[in-house]
Image (tube, rainbow, N blue to C red; front, side, top):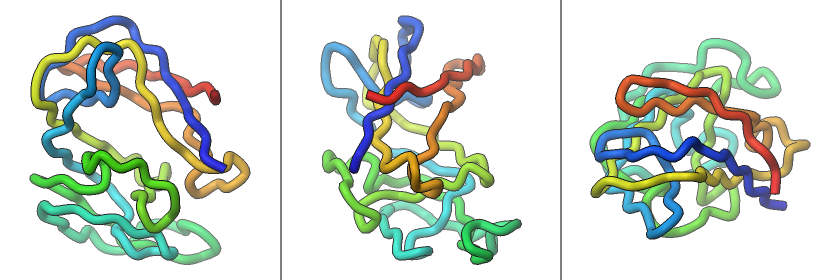
Length: 152
């Protein structure tokens, strides 16, 4: 069962090279994105694609799940599953983000946008791997705010 988690944002203007994901008046175009501290595709039967450079940082430092370790990697200079205009609906079409790695996603947009809401698509809250998105930090122009999620 897919859940939609929303974060209401203070109205703001966002320019290219800022971390954002939504738009109230028109589609936000994500030109490319980088991810620091990602779990590399293929671990635990989760799969995604990325067209840029993937630099392995080695095994995840600490127990990731059931005593297993994934491979930590940084993604730079490309695009893929987060900007392919497709909403992933299974572990084979979505990236896996591990909160213990504190991943950072930097989105590069094609313009300036007025934002009021950010929508994250998650899975079952009972599944601690993909379902426990409870909040996130958003940084725009060097100023960070923490937001908690709500389920809808």
